[in-house]
Image (spheres, rainbow, N blue to C red):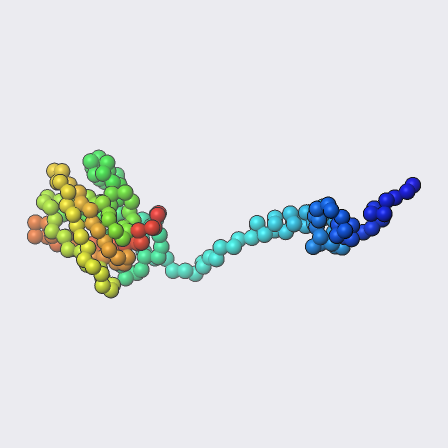
Length: 192
């Protein structure tokens, strides 16, 4: 039987001289397009099973007051423990589950336990509106600002503006009693 001339040529030279698409020219002489495809599938399956994330099993644990907070919180800024929501009144739980403080003063971060640079909606529960001083403990910063909203019985709403990332100290005075707590402030783009 007569064979056309192009069928007697090798696959590589035929692809180089014909007007058909060149499927696996770079593998020319090593494998057919089917073998090339099988090899690529095998390589991709091996690569996809690799764990490319670096982990450090020896990294020291950092103190946090909530597991959803990003880490690390520096050890120089110990966090207050968030109160168990079961110990809060229904009114306080309805405002936010994220409260820190004691019997004199409770402070609740409105939408999450993470404090961010910029505006933070904060609830204060005390017998009277607290007098609050806010200081950045490490470095310098423009002053923080607290804008008080209307009081609702013994709960005071506010917007606390923290201009810089870092460890901030809150000194709140309520009826002559001083309450101190620290919060670590993350960049505004942090999402827990």
